[in-house]
Image 1 (spheres, rainbow, N blue to C red):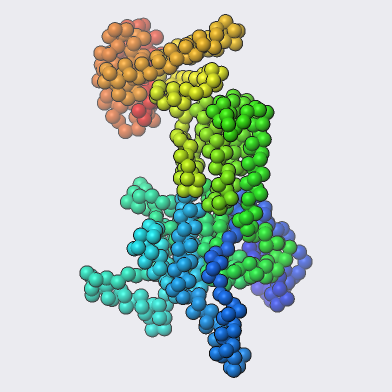
Image 2: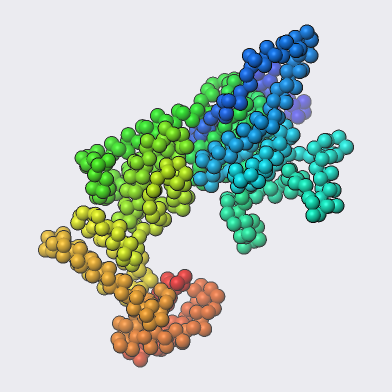
Length: 607
């Protein structure tokens, strides 16, 4: 191309620019400087990737170098340097593949994964030094599983060549033949069949769950492979955001090292960081790789030692404690009073937003550091501040920012159960406690002060009425008016706090009674109860029969799939309701009410 187009300008994109004397990306493209650079730190700041945290593997497995060197010289010192180098490489290879070493590392991997990675629903990769090592790790994990040491699934993804020239391929195909001829005495196959590799690597990206469940398209919905074990495959150009830990037992260098560790820095659901657990000592190679690929990037820009997170955890904890300092209540000795006051303290939306940010950073820090024992001292405050968030969610039900997602709930509960060994924060709910569950709601506010009780009952009634207004307007509109009148009286100080709480309780009881009454009469869905509420305003004592009659009239239309989006069907329902209501009201009024009731039926479509 350059010969044909001697004056053309060539532009390239690269993730790993090389900067060596014998290899230079800039030199290949005429020198100068880069047009634009997107750094790793910028990528993390943008949320495109997550930071990588580095942790060393089992120190006790390090080779006793001085003793080994002395013994080696005694036995092989008389040989040539070339021969000795070859023997040393072979000795190291044998050491790396020793059963004792792989067994100990496998146990370490399982323990680390169980405590650190699995609670967040994430998966891991094990990178081995050669295909033989990958298979040996799979055999060891399989044996430990049979012993009851763990219950995780793992798969080996390696390339397989021709059985004529590839020992591993030969063993694989011999095992297939054996299993075919001995169906009652099959041997285990430790590698993913070549034809299944694409499905296995695609499925690995799915979350954990019931593998029998399927999408509507028939595709798999869940996959329970916890570990994918590789040697050379999948280390470049393969993205699996669900993978958050790389267990590295391979002496990678230069671009291979940088590309491999990037497998676990992809942003994913509930993923705060990627973890590298190193059993091979890559730190020196990382420094060399950075010098080659981008001399201005420091090692700690790529990999951060996990111990560096401890000061961040302490700082985020200090900020959170300091945030509530104006309350002047001891959180350790006056816990209930502290929580009660905290709910009122964060009532202003701007203060509440600041609390949400501080708690998010604290939870993120403690999640990164665990299961390090140094995080245990924060367990009391971890429970305390997350309980405040939970109670605040129940006190301010319209604040979606306080909503605890399923992932957060799972993460928090796992952190408590697995790491903090405590009774835990109860009711890590995605939704606030409903006032209809009177006993549970009473328990929630029982120990609160009158001011906090008022705040919680007020906000929960507002939320319940707001949600119910569209679904059951004839019942909730009068309640909304009463609530507004009560709040106006309180603001004008024409009603005491005790009288207000009593009035709130009466409204709550009416809401509960409405549901209970409808259920007793056989109206066991929100749709039927909403229609019954309307019938009571029109037919009075005959409301029960009127409700049943109306559903008999429109039952055919309601059974039409997707009737809510079909204009003619909606018109037919409206006309039938109007004709029925005309027995009690004028045509114009009946027409308006029928139109309202069609909207109510649509709003309650999932009931």
